[in-house]
Image 1 (cartoon, helix red, strand yellow):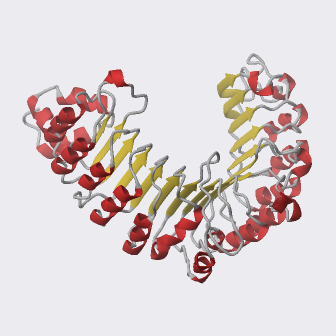
Image 2 (cartoon, helix red, strand yellow):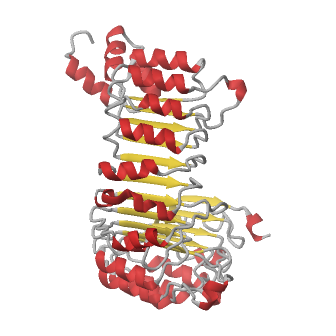
Image 3 (cartoon, helix red, strand yellow):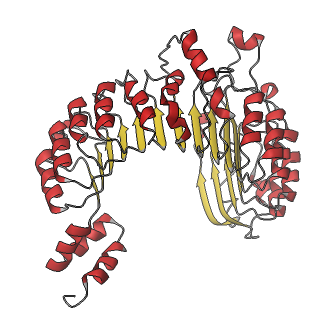
Length: 467
């Protein structure tokens, strides 16, 4: 080992991916130990770090070239010792000059002071905060002022971030490419206007509002006009995910949907106010779209919605079928309260997408309009490889038996389907048509009946969902 050149040993160490294996290799001899210390760029620590600050200082001294650090206290209890605090972030910023990617999860002892320490990390380009309840908007502002190369920012359940001056400052920097804001109660859809020029640079946006807590902000006419006046090209946006958002015509996020020319993936989950015109505009602009996921809300009890139903129809699906000719993944779901008569999409609308686009993965949840006729139509789906059916109660054994005739299907997942029994698998057993079959919580299907229906089988039955 002593005779091998350093470059070759570095290459060998680089091929050892698992941390536990790297630790074992570094103990084999002094040379490997020293080279590993020099090469190690990633560190993940958490509850086992005790005493936290002292242990972190020791690790930083041992691994001077760390570029990525994850600190997570998921499952932490007081008996496991004190968590890392602001002093720990001071140690990190002072001993890791190459730090570019930092993740803090469930770090409940970190405050704004800790983020101010990180402001000295000039190379920091990615920061991800998950449930850091003591951090406020002031702390984030101090960090983004110091870290002017920030391209990735994730804020998840940061409950005390109630100011958005930092968002406006980031917008002026025009460096942000990946922004995730989930369940930060005081940040609303209208606040995203503060990104300003950064919309043009943004490649990935995930925005999720807490479904159980909405901080109702009143935006004046000036704010509404600002959305309408501002040109938001979003020409670099590749992935857009919106959950529990309110989409208002002519302003807010509705201004974004029709301006994403290079969008490849979109996920709209329980977004109230999305209209056919929004999806049609999106489809016409986003010819590169490869994945679409729609989960449609079913609450039509509000007077506003009763007078003016905000319901997606087949017009949306037909626009997608005509314009998104690279679409490979389609996921359509209705919320638990949806009644069959309220289904927005008909079978014809769904099939228009399957027939016109090279769909490889299709997932349907609570879609009552999809039945055995739909399964028969899938027999001509030349690209379909993965099919997932959840709570599709109109599909029977007759429809499932047609799976053996699907040209390229290799993965099938069934969950909570009441109309399918053991007889539905007769044509699949022994055929080795499928590579993978997963059956979950289907009351009329037994594990014995699906034996031999695929090369790999997963079976689970928990019927508590029925009661």
